[in-house]
Image (cartoon, rainbow over all chains, first blue to last red; front, side, top):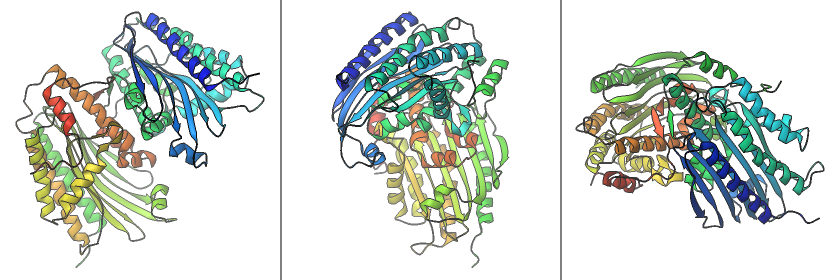
Length: 299
Length: 299
């Protein structure tokens, strides 16, 4: 059987971007994505799509890119190589809703290969509620578990823990949100073919819309107080802290002269920092108590 | 002559914090600092002072600390040592004014020594106008040059360039603001004694109030548009990016389990991120053109 090519994977990601944008516009109901097509001097390019001041989404980005060229020194060094070309393609999403009851969502699915023959898939989906509602967190994790279980029973427990460890704001001793799944270096190990891994990654991408639709449902029109709106901006500040201090993808992009506006589309429209801010409501207090690793949201 | 001790230096920094807080409250005219005294389990502690929603300053911090204990691995490694105790003391300031015409200011003065006998001073002052006014930038640099020239003719040109290089937001290809001075590892080299270097560092500390008073003067009541206020929040976003992505002091503090609330008091009360935001006024456009290294503000 012919192995799937990098062009087919990139096309699959493009289609995924199209499908997700269409669904998010429909879910939003008030705004449309604006597209910027860009090219990278060293090879390849992308389509950045941004939605602003919608009914549901205050600021959101759904980006596709497929870039290639000489492998950045950082990766060469990590892989103990002196020279090689690379190809990387993927879809990255962050949506910041305006209503503080509605969670922030992030997804990334990606494929990487080098001229030496090495290749892998990576990605994940995770949810950052400003205010955590355990029942909604359970539903979100159920979506992810179902997708994982369709491919390998070991995926969900492994990738759920990986997300807990990855989306952790160490200097605050808090998880970013309720986690989700995170995986990297999925390759042709443990009896899996490239096509098997691609099918899994594509299904992760397809889980985005139903999982977020459920996460939004019944919350998008929920009334909120000034305290909750302020709390949202404080939590968005933590999101900024995670992305700029800890996130390896952001760091790698900025270090290797990536397209800054596309990388930093993940940052919220507005964020606040108050010295030593304390939660003001029962729900805000409970949220802080739930920003921990190792919570089993499903059982 | 008896060498100045670490206790005398720490006392000097404490007095500097007191004097600056008093002057900043007077300059503000509407608010007072709130103090948090904290101690570090491993040794030492600090006094964090924060001012909020003043007449001039929307959010400001003037922090003193004097900490000691086993040297963090990161420093040991950098100095090629296997074990040593350290002592570090200093004053750190960031003031975020509410009026977008008024610049953000930052100062840090610090002393570090180890049980091996090595010691040094470091620090600097730099200004980040949301909207650059060259005449005001000139005045600010004149203050710093005068202080430097009182001690060594080589200081201002060297430390001014160091600030240009240090306060640089690489992923935006912009300086953070109009720079100022930055220096590190000032020790007993080039004929200088510890007392000489201490006198210089103390005078840098004493330059803060007159330099900022001039920077604020005639601008604090200047009317501004909604566009300028939004621009301020975008520029504050860049300030966050510098501090969280590039600033070595912030990174070191977060990496070594420093007091997060004191370290991140530098972050603005409100910051915005808009995808691909463009300047809207002549002054905003000119500001972007002046965020470059190597500008001689004085001549």
